[in-house]
Length: 194
Figure (cartoon, rainbow, N blue to C red):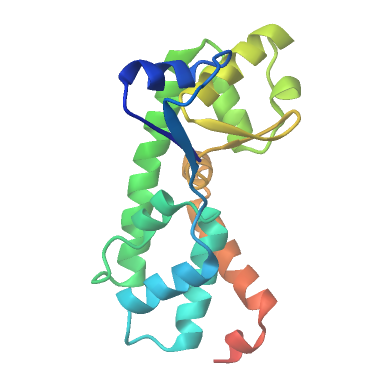
């Protein structure tokens, strides 16, 4: 993520235009996602009584499930007083509501928006999944990206900005959690025995 710090409102507006030149009215800052070590530190501070192996496995699962996005992690770990099942149920409810709202937002942005959003959530490539001509699909993708619903992960490849919206939208929330847990055990079989 890049942030522009500047003293004049006009400079900030100018910096957002694609064709704009940006001269010394401000400074661009690049904010990178926290590293795994930072998340380990945060988890140790939040749950100091957990065993290190359990804490490590939990952080690994959360990072795989959320792709390391801080806002998504915050939803999953928002209330340390809840049991894991209660926390999972609350997060599922929140992401299901967010998925519905995102789908409605996509629908309001472009006539192909909701269809594209749903197809991308399923892992489909947009140009082959949605009939309507390349120009219309490109316009819809641009609108969804500008609204922060999608991001490009390579030429012709798109993914939802919020990683857990897809499983919530598709009704596979529990499958995504189970997969993250299995993947943690696959990487370290000794964790399964503990």
